[in-house]
Image (cartoon, rainbow, N blue to C red):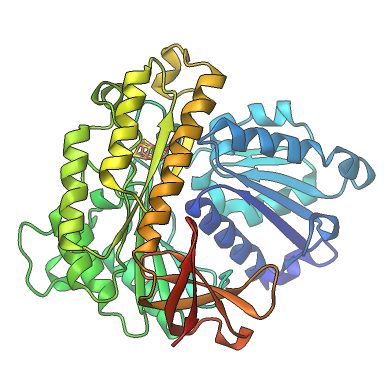
Length: 457
Ligand code: 5AD
Ligand code: SF4
C-alpha cells in the first residue's frame, strides 16, 4: 500500500514547537521530515494545525515551566477540537515518561528522543484508536540511518554525529534523557554530508553532547585519514574526512568538553580550511571545589591551559562558554574564582545560567542553598562583565575585513541583512535578499557586545 494512502480523510497539518538546544532543533526537523514523507503538511501556526508537537529541553527548569504553560494554554482548543493530536517529544518526555500524561491530560503522547522515528506510527495509532501512548523505551538505541529530505534551512544543516552522554556532570539531566553515548560511523556521517553538499548546502554544524569523545564505532579509521597517527583523535579524523567534501565550505561543531579536548583539535582548526575558528568550551565554574562537586573532570588551571593552547594555535579564533552560578554551596569566594576565570580567558561570548536542581541528576542530593536573590546578583555581575569583555573582543575587528555567510533578512528592516563570520559572530550589513546564502567580504565599521556592523567591500 502507498504510505500516503494511510492518511486519507485524516487530519494532515502538523505544527512543531521547539524549546531547546541545537540537538532538539535537529530532532524536530527530522520528525517534521518523517511526517512530510508520510503525507502530512506543515501548518504555519498552532491555530491551523491538526497535530501539535512540543519538543522540549529539560536541562533547566525555566524551559520546562514554559513548556508546561504552553501546553496548558491549549486546554480550550482541545475541548473545542478533541480530534487534534497533541504530543510531547524530546528530553522532557523521556524524563517524565507516563507521568507527564497525568500532569497534562490533554497530551495524547509522550515520546523520548530515542523513539522519535516511531512518531508517524504513534500519531496514526492515536488517530485511529484515540489512546494515550508513551514511547520512551529506546533511550539507549542507535537511531536508524534514515534521512528525510526536509531541512529547515537551504544552505546550513545540523548533522548529528552521535547522541547521549557518559559524563554525568552532577547537575545535568542529559545522561538520563538521551542515554549512554553512542556514535555514528564516519562513513554514514560522510554520506549524509555528501548528500547535503550535492543539494547545495554550504555549512554544516556537527552535533554531539561531547564531540571530543567521538569514536568511530567500527574503528576503521585509516580510510579517512591521509596520515594516521596515534595522536589524532577520531573526531579530528572525522573533521579531516568532512573537510574533503566538495561543496561544503564551513564546518562547525559543538559541544567540546575541556576534559577531552586537546591540541590535536586546535591544530586541525588551524590547518583544515573548512573548519571554522570557533570553539564552544563550557567552563561551568572557576572554583576547583565546585568543579569537583560538578564532576567535570578538570581544574580551573587545566581549563586555562587549554584555552591558552587554543589561542596559541588559532590566534584569531573565538571562544565561547557556558557558566552556572549558584551551584550548591558556592561561596562568594568560589564565585570570585569564576569571575577571575572569565576575566582571564577573555571569552567572546558566554551563556550563563542560575543553577536549578534537575532530578534525577546527582546534585539534587546537595542542598540548593544559594538564595534566588544571590544567584541573580551573581548572574548579573557576570553578565555585565561579559558584556564588557565581548565588546572589547569585538572592537579588535573594527576596520578589518571578514568573510561573512549571509543568513537572513534583518527582522526589522528588509534592506538589512544578518550573517555570520567564521568565528560565529553576528554581522549586520546592508543588502538585498538575493544575497542570502552567499559569502561576502565585509569591512567592520562599528561593534556592540553582540554584533558587528559593516559594509561589503
Ligand atoms: N542548572 C543550570 N544550568 C544547567 N545547565 C545544565 N544543567 C543545568 C542545571 N541543572 C547548563 C550548563 C550546560 C548548558 C547547556 O546548560 O551550563 O552547559
Ligand atoms: Fe550534561 Fe556534562 Fe554530558 Fe554536557 S558533558 S551533556 S553537561 S552530563
